[in-house]
Image (cartoon, rainbow, N blue to C red):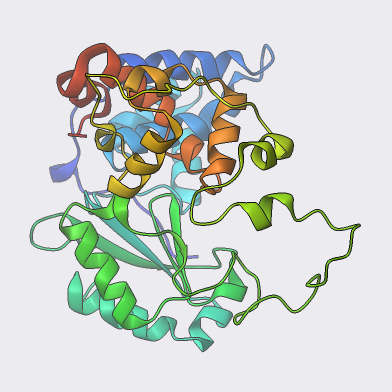
Length: 320
């Protein structure tokens, strides 16, 4: 592993403070650990600091060390060891992590790297002129059957061609990243074989096809989904006179908003009130593979419901 050091002093902010909501989240996270083991919260706290600021600053490391009563060097060791932590500013709209491990490299990762060099910057970790895009080569991202692939923040984009990656980068550069389809970029189901299933294709009564057969393109029977997991959240039978722009929630684009409206979800308050079981139900219903939790829809909706765009900018440090 190459040596990882903190960014130069000239880009380091003097202070760091968690937003009000993130501070409450951090305190709750620390309390999850037994007495005397609170320092185990170091990784989640550093990740939340990175999500708030875009990268892990020296001031953030010092703040986390103080919150956990840890020697500064111990927190610094964690931040510099794990490559999930960005130690210098990265693209504000997209930081593209190209998998360069053997399966991906054999399937064209080198061409994807060339795309990043052409579209973003010739050097890894160096943002483009506008500071909106950056890239790096990383080790295995765990989807070898779908090689080659990249990660952009928390989402994976698989079965890529250079042309498709160029399109994805253009969408993020234009501020439409939340509308880009995640996962396989070809016609396949998760990591199933290209060209369709090769097993479990008959009508064997011992195989339960209820969800996979009934759910397609983000829709399905309520009965099939309810049988899978979670519980259906309260929905509105009729569209209210005043609706919220659900697209302000990161991770929701026009298509997803339309699907939610079709389900009977029109307001931030509805989403903010979802329980974990209801999040699971909606996640299964829309085939999101954990997006609701990853993108923190409930948290975002709660902030927007309380104070709108202005409050969102205060909490998350960016515009919705």
